[in-house]
Length: 95
Image 1 (spheres, rainbow, N blue to C red):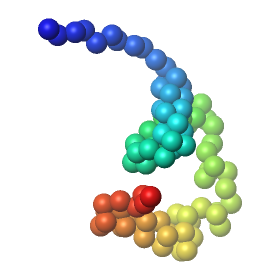
Image 2 (image 1 turned 90 degrees about the vertical axis):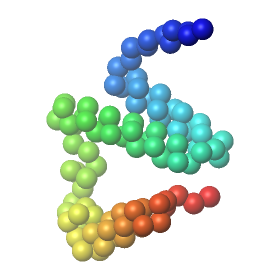
Image 3 (image 1 turned 120 degrees about the vertical axis):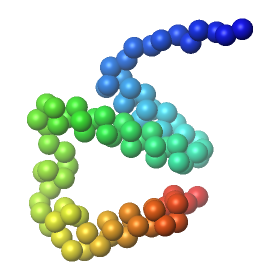
């Protein structure tokens, strides 16, 4: 028999908070690091979007240009290395 799945309505903030709580719990339990990363990144995306809507600047908008990776050569090289490593090796997360 099919069971109905209960529908739960949550706000974006509640969803982000729950994602972070689960990510932190999994991290300290040394469980699935891919899930930790995925949940934390999803929560970060939600919070950035909500902050942007309210005109709240993130850390990169407040940072001096010399600390912004996309604004200096050293940071750009590091960013490209990490991005390419993700796509070529399949994972940058190691136990």
